[in-house]
Amino acid sequence: MAQTPEQFRRKVAKFNKVIVGLHRMGIALGPQALITVPGRHSGQMRTAPIAVVPIAGQRYIFQAYPKAAWVANVRAAESVTLSRGRRSSTVRLVELPLEERRVILHQHITNSPARVGKMLVTTGLVDTPTPEAVAAAAERIAVFRIES
Image 1: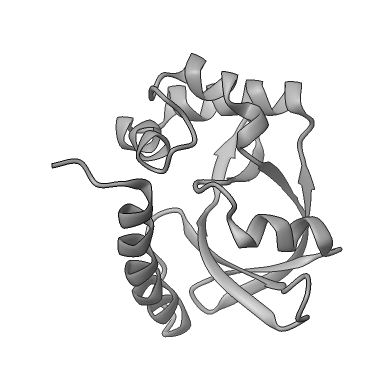
Image 2: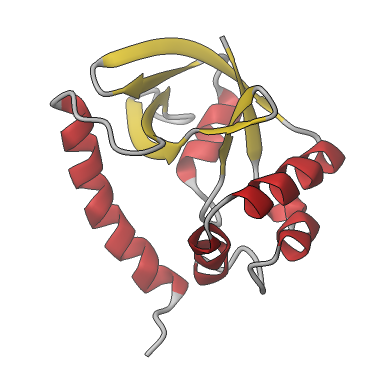
């Protein structure tokens, strides 16, 4: 039986707590990193696991869920902290304009395992996991380039 986007998100939220704990112990997994950014309303520091994806010599992060709080917080912040294991750095995240986002999303899905596109279907951001469909959904998927 297929799970709803909300059921999937709740499952991932539980797993994310494990990822955050491992990073804080100094254990980094795959492309995972932690993004720490002040809450746009509270100002309290918020931490979430994200995947850092290298494409054409640059590093990017992608929104994986509709209405992801970290996306709104990044848009309101001047800089964020990216941590991987026990290493961290303060960086600027530059949100890509729509047309540039389409190109990067297409490349991302083309060069990623099939599960990446399937996850975007499960979360409700796209209808099909093809590079063309994901690029066409660029207005619903925030993409940020990491700048030191």
